Image: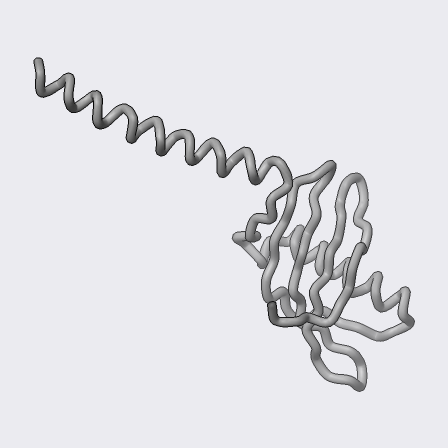
Length: 119
């Protein structure tokens, strides 16, 4: 009986610590922390990237084409914010990398489209 008691005194606090850690990480993600996008080939992520490229091309009167999604993160706010690193082909200028931010609630809004800078 004594052995079982000491097992619970050690095991239960460790179990509670693990559970608390998982809850804190989940709450941080729900409150707006950036999380990596696991599947960059997801059709909706591709749709967001295509939107960013076409919208920037429209606004700047450029002929742009999405080449590849290199990296992506999302953030849950009052909708979803996407921060993507994209390889984009510009007609006559080759392929360059850009960091884009797209907000999505009921529709998409291009918030930022900047040349990619290594941090």
